[in-house]
Image 1: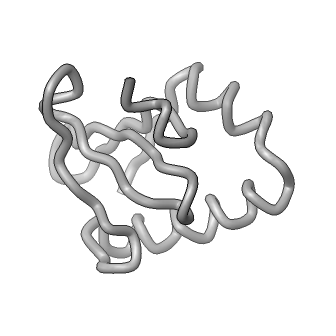
Image 2: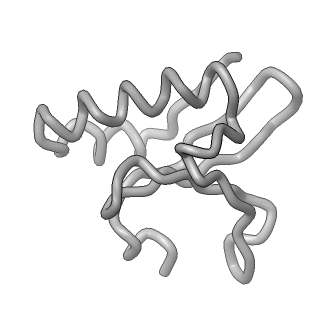
Length: 85
Protein backbone atom coordinates (compact mmCIF):
# COMPACT_ATOMS: atom_id res chain seq x y z
CA UNK A 1 0.00 0.00 0.00
CA UNK A 2 1.30 3.43 -0.96
CA UNK A 3 0.75 6.16 1.65
CA UNK A 4 1.22 9.83 0.79
CA UNK A 5 1.44 12.47 3.50
CA UNK A 6 0.11 16.02 3.30
CA UNK A 7 2.43 18.86 4.37
CA UNK A 8 0.04 19.47 7.28
CA UNK A 9 0.38 15.84 8.41
CA UNK A 10 4.18 15.99 8.15
CA UNK A 11 4.33 19.21 10.19
CA UNK A 12 2.07 17.89 12.94
CA UNK A 13 3.87 14.53 12.99
CA UNK A 14 7.24 16.25 13.56
CA UNK A 15 5.76 18.06 16.57
CA UNK A 16 4.71 14.83 18.29
CA UNK A 17 6.78 13.44 21.13
CA UNK A 18 9.18 10.65 20.23
CA UNK A 19 6.92 8.18 22.06
CA UNK A 20 3.86 9.29 20.04
CA UNK A 21 5.85 9.05 16.79
CA UNK A 22 6.79 5.46 17.71
CA UNK A 23 3.17 4.55 18.48
CA UNK A 24 2.05 6.21 15.22
CA UNK A 25 4.58 4.18 13.24
CA UNK A 26 3.36 0.98 14.89
CA UNK A 27 -0.26 1.81 14.01
CA UNK A 28 0.75 2.71 10.46
CA UNK A 29 2.34 -0.73 10.09
CA UNK A 30 -0.95 -2.33 11.20
CA UNK A 31 -2.82 -0.05 8.77
CA UNK A 32 -0.57 -1.08 5.87
CA UNK A 33 -1.33 -4.74 6.60
CA UNK A 34 -5.09 -4.26 7.07
CA UNK A 35 -6.65 -0.75 7.00
CA UNK A 36 -9.74 -2.03 8.81
CA UNK A 37 -7.98 -3.98 11.58
CA UNK A 38 -10.18 -3.79 14.69
CA UNK A 39 -7.28 -2.29 16.72
CA UNK A 40 -7.41 0.85 14.55
CA UNK A 41 -11.16 1.46 14.80
CA UNK A 42 -11.14 2.81 11.23
CA UNK A 43 -14.38 4.63 10.48
CA UNK A 44 -16.03 6.88 7.90
CA UNK A 45 -16.44 10.54 8.74
CA UNK A 46 -19.54 12.68 8.23
CA UNK A 47 -20.36 16.34 7.84
CA UNK A 48 -17.66 18.59 6.43
CA UNK A 49 -15.25 15.62 6.42
CA UNK A 50 -17.66 13.40 4.46
CA UNK A 51 -15.76 11.04 2.16
CA UNK A 52 -12.79 10.79 4.53
CA UNK A 53 -11.92 8.14 7.10
CA UNK A 54 -10.09 8.21 10.40
CA UNK A 55 -8.34 5.68 12.57
CA UNK A 56 -7.24 5.69 16.19
CA UNK A 57 -3.55 5.99 17.03
CA UNK A 58 -4.24 5.91 20.76
CA UNK A 59 -7.01 7.10 23.07
CA UNK A 60 -6.20 10.74 22.30
CA UNK A 61 -4.80 10.86 18.73
CA UNK A 62 -6.40 10.15 15.35
CA UNK A 63 -5.28 10.19 11.72
CA UNK A 64 -7.65 11.55 9.07
CA UNK A 65 -7.11 9.88 5.72
CA UNK A 66 -8.55 9.43 2.27
CA UNK A 67 -8.61 6.22 0.25
CA UNK A 68 -7.54 7.30 -3.24
CA UNK A 69 -7.88 3.83 -4.83
CA UNK A 70 -7.26 0.20 -3.85
CA UNK A 71 -3.58 0.64 -3.10
CA UNK A 72 -3.12 4.36 -2.43
CA UNK A 73 -4.00 6.33 0.69
CA UNK A 74 -3.50 10.00 1.56
CA UNK A 75 -2.94 10.94 5.22
CA UNK A 76 -4.41 14.43 5.68
CA UNK A 77 -3.60 15.18 9.32
CA UNK A 78 -2.92 13.77 12.76
CA UNK A 79 -4.03 15.14 16.10
CA UNK A 80 -6.51 15.04 18.94
CA UNK A 81 -10.27 15.14 18.45
CA UNK A 82 -9.86 18.84 17.63
CA UNK A 83 -8.82 17.85 14.09
CA UNK A 84 -12.48 17.02 13.36
CA UNK A 85 -13.51 20.66 13.77
